[in-house]
Each structure stands twice: as C-alpha cells, then as structure tokens.
Image (cartoon, rainbow, N blue to C red; front, side, top):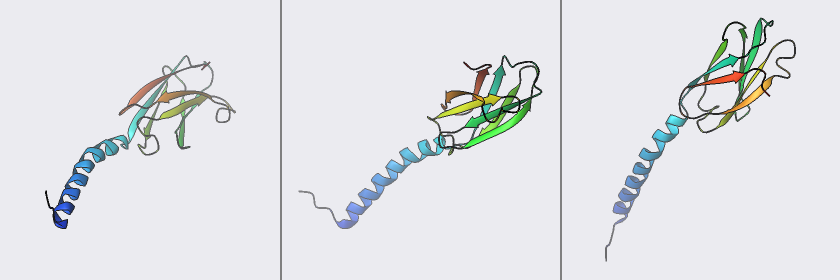
Length: 125
C-alpha cells in the first residue's frame, strides 16, 4: 500500500495542472491572435466610384470601409482574434450606392488558421 503525504498529493496535483496548461494555453493563445483578411472583389459593376465592404463577425462585431472602384479592387482588414476567432464563420457584405449599407450582398466564409484572402464575386446569387 502506498501512503502519500498531503504535500506529495499537492505536488502531484500542481504538476498535472501545469502539464495540462502547457498543452492548452498555446492552442488558445494561437486561436486568439489578430489576423489579416483581404477581400478581392470580382465582376464589380462599372459606374459606381465607391464600394462599401463590411465584415460581420460571429458575435455581432462588424467592421466596414468604403473603397475606390477600379481594376481588381480589394479591401484589407486587421481583425481581432477574440472577435473573429479561428474555427468560426464570418460574413463579407458588399454594396454600392445609397442603400449599400442597408441592403448589401453577403457571403459567408469560414476562418481557418492565420491570415486569409477571399474572393467575393459580384453579384452574389
């Protein structure tokens, strides 16, 4: 029969917790890292000089910007790993004109690991 003192039990418990944290903390920390999203717009209609681009996160967070229309327009966002974590879905919404922010066209994407570049083809149907 093995008899352990309270101090031995505590030492073993601390060692087990430390080992567990060493496995979990790097995974969690990696998942919460800020990342870059590049949105490449394809088949953009001729005419509008500005394009509204919005990224909607899984927890209600969203960021937007107006970009100039041109040859192969794209928008770049630096997104928070907390608001847009790895393994979650996010939506990219695009529009032009007066109602661009009210009724944009949207597509859903899945965030894997690290920086991403996605293509948004106009019109989204």
